[in-house]
Amino acid sequence: MKIFFDGAAQTVTGSKHLLEINGRKLLLDCGLFQGKRAEYYERNQNFDFDPATVDAVILSHAHIDHSGNLPNLVKNGFTGPIYATPPTVTLGNIMLQDSAHIQQGDILYLNKKRARRGEPLAVPLYTIADALEAIDHYYPVKYDEAFSPIPGVTVQFKNAGHILGSAAIRIDIIENGSKKSIWFSGDIGRKDLPLIPEPVLPSDVDYLLMECTYGDQSHDSVDQAYQKFKEVVTKTIKRGGKVIIPAFAVGRTQEIVYFLNQMISEDGIGRLPVYVDSPLAVEASRIFKQYPEYFDEETFDFIRKEKHPALDFRDLKYVSSVEESKSLNDLQGPMVIISASGMAEAGRILHHLKNNIEEKRNTVLIVGWQAPNTLGRRIADKDPQVRIFGEEYRLRAEVETITGLSAHAGQDFLLKYARAVKERVKKIYLVHGEPDAAGVFQEKLKAERIGPAEYPTFKQEVEI
Image (cartoon, rainbow, N blue to C red; front, side, top):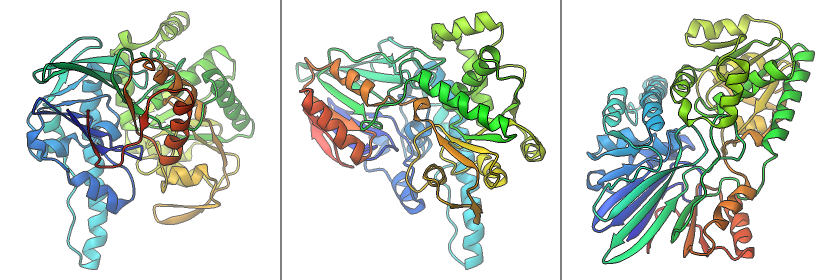
């Protein structure tokens, strides 16, 4: 058996791990690599294997850095099933179409510049038609339901506690008369996050492919993060400002809405207009409500006690149309605006930042990891000037960062995750992490005699 690390190797994004078993091929995730434009297109357009030879895809969850290159895979010859949990299938329907819309819009903007310079026109990675073709390959499978994507292999999804429907992937293999097992963590969630249950820990496996995004730091507890969030909102309200939150449309937005609901319903901060300004987030929130069986007990208790859905309350407005979005710029007084994208690289959040970043009464709240070379990272680093739509703006708004709202496990829970297989695991492969984070985490694992742990390079192949 071989594992080919073709994505999220020594970086966080672009999850793509190819398994070769019994002469067949399984692909774990097929995400978009996110980075500088030239590298983005080079990595995402070209596969280091023939997609037509892949028998099946096993998808951990719907986030675009894990699923976003599926249309390109299908366009290049993949014809097999894409196995995922039911919520991931439903979310994937809207997210792949949204991603294709962004691909086409970005190329349209780029080609205007190229045409003026007399340069050849570029083509998008994929189109909405390609996305719809990929969606036809989705095949839903519930948590803990065993299935066999290829001969000799049995797979189960386990709750990963990251976003709705997110899964770790357990793979049991019979090859050449011998048995072995692999556990791919996907993105590992947090204990005590709102809405969804905490992650299931791995057990009784020989090999662990494990994310390490925050391998170098532990988060504040969710309660501490909530209290800091409330403090940020309260002080911004007092000075008459707006809280602008760049947030991923799926997962993070719904958690933030839940917390704001709790603040208004239970903690007496008073009436506060809250706007979710992202068509994708609006649709995703609607989908969340379709799967109450995937919520945790705390959320059920909150819904029962308050007698309204966790993601819908009196002063919450889901904004869909462009006209409604533009009208938010004319509103005065305290409010919260949550908008995509989470790293402020595209989408309506750019307009809200442009219109509010130079007002010192306002707060820009960073609630997740920001990749290098993104606008979100520059704001988080408090650069005195930032460029938005090609124009320079002074960063006069207050900037606050709350890592405790991250949907990724911190170092403490990652260690707990690895300890769960300490007695049996033969090797741990660390993926989905930058070198500094992975290096610190490797040392932690070594100190606890868990492993050995390897940090594969991009395009590395190992045989187990």
